[in-house]
Amino acid sequence: MTDKSRSIDDIIVDPELKGQFKQLVLERVGVMPDTLQIAVGAANFTKQELTQHVRQEDEIGKQVMEMELEFLQDLASGAVYGNE
Amino acid sequence: MAMNKPMLITRPHYDVVTNYLCSWSESIITLASEKGRDVYDLKGDKAERVRFQSYCKAKMPALLFLNGHGNADVITGHNDEPLVDGSDHFGNSVVYARSCECAKRLGVKLVENGLRTFIGYTRKFIFGYLTTKITRPREDMLAALFLESSNLIVSTLLKGHTAQEADARGKEAMYRNFRKMIASTASYEERYAARWTWGNIKSQVILGSPNGRV
Image 1: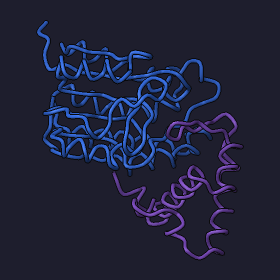
Image 2: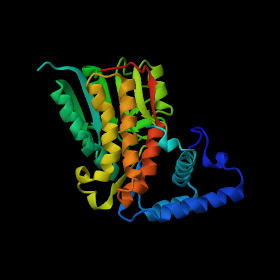
Image 3: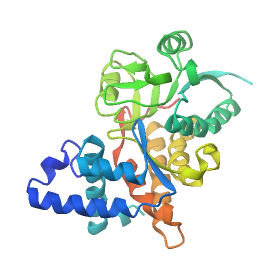
């Protein structure tokens, strides 16, 4: 999350922009290898399950969106290369 | 060998996630024993509240290494039984909790209750694993990129360093793994899972005294 106290709904307020970002996340989740699963909290998810959560924008789906947003922002700002 | 400054570890294993955490904690138990620590290992169904409280009271562990599910208010043990909540008092101990969102409120409350140091996560602890390795978690080199670096927090503490050093070394190891995972030599799975490592690095925090040591 860009701001640890804020959810994706607060970070991207514009519905159109949020819809576009959701589509981007769905595309990014869509290329997750089938041989990979993710453990998020008390549950583990396949690519298909993760896609479903993002589509529904439930708690897990929102967390995935927040994580993707933070990662992309840090990638763009160069922060991911700044810890050398 | 002199036995001192006990370590208490909880590691339930009743689903895929807890099986991974349990398996990857094994090396820490070995290290703690080699370091001459008394180790109290609440593994599997032994990770239940009554037993946990009894060990905490009787053995007064200097280090608590908590693995399991949880949320901002509790860390759970076997079959999701709440093991630790905000009413607990751990005195002068150092706690490392590999559990979701535990630093959001629970860690803060424990420090308010007198705990010396708490290291944990403000968001969900995330790791990736390979579907081909579910029954053999220790052979899963993708999961290793997440779990070995978090183990480093505890091994650093066991070697006598401060909580601040342990927190930093854990993050540095995660970051090294992150760089490895985004390199062109990484597998597709590693490259994809790199973003999750980044999330863990950013949500790991230290609460209470950074000078806590065990």
